[in-house]
Length: 219
Image (cartoon, rainbow, N blue to C red; front, side, top):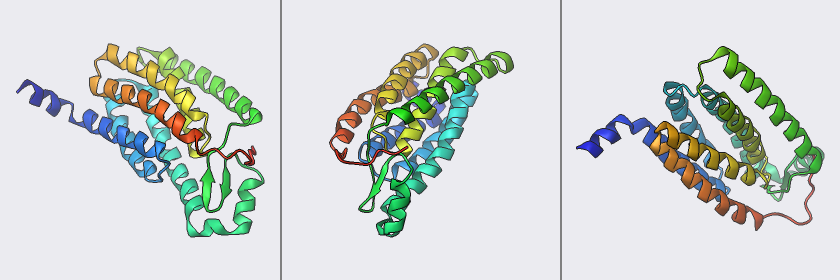
């Protein structure tokens, strides 16, 4: 009865945790279905974090909704029938991180210039979120929220472009998040982020095997 009551009281959070685990599994497999699953997971966690007053995390899930749509579009366009066209392939090779070749958006390494830009974006986002959370909300953990949210935004963009190094960012995010949510009693979410952490190392190894040694790593 106790277990039943606990599941009933935390059903939404448990559902979000399950879809989140499925999401990472699909991410490791580089399957485009990760994006619609990600949309569902993000929608669920907007509610979970809102009720827990984790406003930065809630905003991050809103960002995930947007980037999931973009990632879905980018991956679908690169793997669809039209991706075979020479003109479209050149469009990607001439100016975007990630590579489009043979009908597939390839996994690539992060170029130094892009890494510097993303580092600056992270610092700016962190500073802005810390200021907003400290001055305009009742968030109990503005520093942690700002750090995790900013780093996750950068990591998700890198995922959408299939940049290999995004896994290193997820390892940091998952470890810090698991410890934090443990202190807040969100145990299904703790399990989710612990699984995320383990799967991040799996993804790191799996994606490394698919990197092209002679790819074009354009900004």
